[in-house]
Length: 602
Image (cartoon, rainbow, N blue to C red; front, side, top):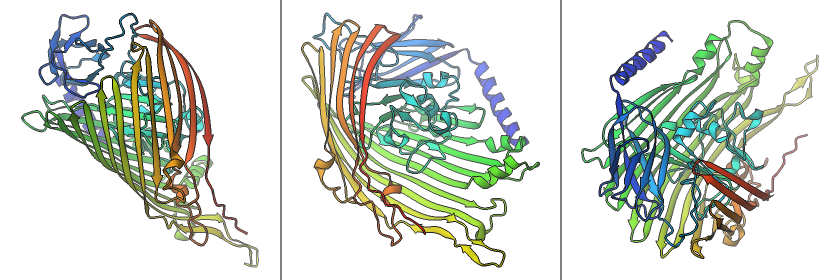
């Protein structure tokens, strides 16, 4: 432990000396068209409160150097587009900020009514999702009091979001508008990431600590209704985590020491032409060392890793690779002074070994009036749990619980996005191969004997292996959007259908046909009315689908998709660029269609 403290102190000393030797910083980035995803040359980039500013080059790239070390608002503007401001960007010595900015085309016909957006919703609300949406920037996540740079904890502070079991202080379960923690979906740069917390609850969500590194995140968007049709399995919310791109100008990094962990992040170019960049990080907890000092018997321990590599093949095609993984271990150790409370903790809590990862590649190709996205990914979650009557001795004869379960998904997603004469059209589909394996042993009732060694209560236990191996899931979607009446009225409608090869009626596309429509109407300057209606479906967790009876027969093949109907209406008032008032009425109807089999033991 002394060596670890020495290495941490040495790293921080070197980093501090290097930082103090510089008295200015820099910022760079790229500006693109939000709809067409094309670079925007000749965009004005201004640091508010200074005389510094530049114009983006032919590739939409800019760089400003020699900036005094403090916090700035940075404005981006070009004729024909809505201006965008990044708030509270901190300029540090040593590391150069690199940002990606998307500008939305301005509505040229709307001359008498000007709608402004505040810093949180500037790039959050869309024509498809005009309400029930919130956005957090990386600066807001870092500045959140008590968040400890944990994105999952900061999300729980948003309006309409509730914490998990135990009041939310010890777990990152996300409960939105009365839904369950398993009703949310998470996308990282367009790739679904089922697990975003350490010590995840299988078949649900949560965990005491988030996996995502805040140094990677550019912003987070939460949609709690009016979901875009491209997202499947969402009943309560869709989270879109957008990662930034590695700095193409130089190799740089940072080391962060918090109350429970040590994290290192590095980024930079991988090629001389700056077309290939990387982000990489590793994080290690040291809670086990702290608990050892205060003589607690538990030893939680985790690692996590995250990376992103971006390569611009040509002006129209960009290739990206992302990877995120975690290793979690929960153990016990010798205690110096035994107390009833400590002994209870040791024997009432199981040993846990979990590892999870998501890896994927995306290909973005610019089209004449839009762009094409292709994403291929694999995610895996392995969960091992053991418990004994005496967790200290760990005798095989005293084992009361053993779980070895693995979930994996191989996914191919494709979507095409077209913008033509004010019409926004998006369509696509997805194909998934789901894999599941579960071996469970648990003692429900221990054997009891009388004084003559005669059994008066037999042992009752479950020794179970799921016969479910793999099956296919597939779906398709279409979304069409347009503004009418001098751009006052925005209308977006769509539908999606999802199918699978496992459940009895899983191949019926009409069973999960989920229409949705949303409206946005500009009432007056600073006032907007929004409304949406939609139906959404989710397949049951693998822990339910893979359940079998005593004859090893799968009993939940008749399970139907869970359904949730949303009805939302609200008014938005924006008095200025930094203040926003919204009032929303929300009605949610949840239909649970699961046929669950109950085993009865006599």
